[in-house]
Length: 137
Image (cartoon, rainbow, N blue to C red; front, side):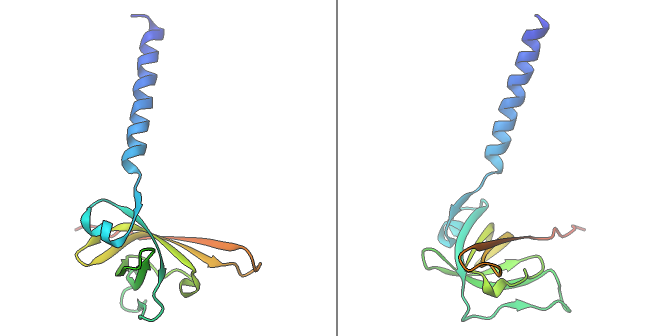
């Protein structure tokens, strides 16, 4: 075989591998009901239920934050985030969670908040928080 043919096959194989890895790492949007039915990671869009308490105690565990959220379909669920509480979390207008259900709780690995901007009246500020990874022993 010619060197150009071998190089072409390698380029095609790399392109296929990139496409497959991109597709497998992507997650879809859904609701808490969808998250209960699937074990894959989902994005859930909703808003904070301000009538129920937030739990974050940095003196006991700085990497545990829980709250209640209603998704866009109106279903409410307890959310557990293994990271610090994001700044101005209570001011968020909309929350996008990335994670999966574990029992009756949604365990978020990432929180994306859409908050009213503190600088202009008609713009929205977007803040992202990632969960910390806990070491396995």
